[in-house]
Length: 412
Ligand SMILES: Nc1ncnc2c1ncn2[C@@H]1O[C@H](COP(=O)(O)OP(=O)(O)OP(=O)(O)O)[C@@H](O)[C@H]1O
Ligand SMILES: [Mg+2]
Image (cartoon, rainbow, N blue to C red; front, side, top):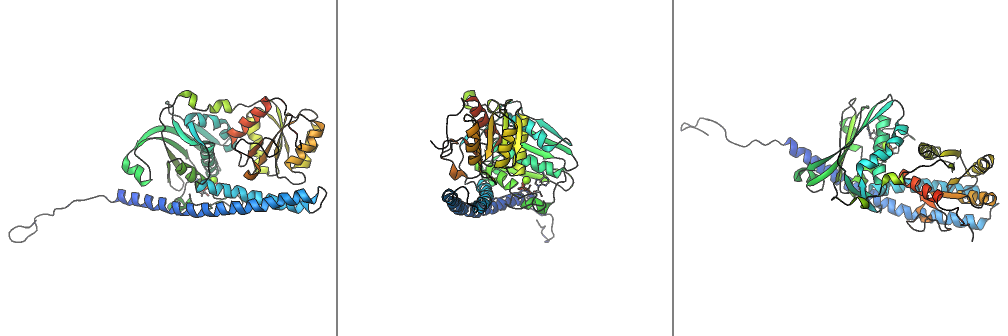
């Protein structure tokens, strides 16, 4: 405004804070970037899976036609093993790009967390303290089978890795309301959400790292230590279930990951699968044969945690030796399908000769081997797919042990 002489009296205008808008724009850009990486990764993984199916299919054919004593089988087994590893990788990529089809069901978030608490204490070690603060009300979300466990597991292992000298890992849950504006930038709707906060007191990260953590294969870990898929999978799962994830961190000040998942309409208690009931352990003796030391360790640790006595073997031949050494003590065989020297099925057939009623569960990284989602192989042997979800493994083992000794034979 000016006076009659043209001198400025005061200025008029509106002042708008653009920091918030800039932040929202950045979030939107990030979401779009993740969307296109997802499409790319999913496309590759899908085609790749088909190629792997061919490779594995022909390997099986060679194995069948070559005859048991053929020295070339060793090479075929190597190819099969490599293809198996590639398959695990593509499964992870599919999880990231949300192309994995899993059945979604109501899950009580607090109950899931309580269910994995014991296992987490083992994974994070003694130097890290685990603190859980769970909301008093029931928090129900609709989420894919096994997804909740995988989210928690991936975040917890990262937290552990960020605290090599110990610290505190906290898991918190609460119900929150998200306004339309906030939810919209993440492609979601206004409404009630369940917030799951996983924070650590570890080394934290800078802005540049933070911008890339959800990208597939981004890792700051040494070669062989991390594949950089953990958080990509978390991102994929969260978005597949119509939620989103926030991270706040500064170098040296730890990191906090917050997952928001839409709160489901209240359902009757009967509709919620009782995770606890599924997480029953036992005191039977289980022989675990698996050539991958990491997988073997986590499986054995889990089973021991739930009361089982575990005998470990590093391949098929070793499994047979350990079985014999333990006399009649073994109640169940948990066998990896693809192993050097003797594969899971061969090992089972061999041991069945001494104990026709021995119970078995095969682990396979190759879904093509499984007839249906029922977890039965073509030959009628109970089977579980890798990566093995803890809840599922425990449930399936209990089911097999509680059933009458199987009369199933491999070659009817
Ligand atoms: N809690 C955390 N504190 C500090 N940095 C983290 C944390 N979580 C993740 N990061 C960073 O994000 C990167 C990517 O994590 P992500 O879980 O995707 O892969 P990774 O842990 O490196 O490997 P993988 O999970 O496949 O074994 C990590 O390498 C690390 O630099
Ligand atoms: Mg990780």
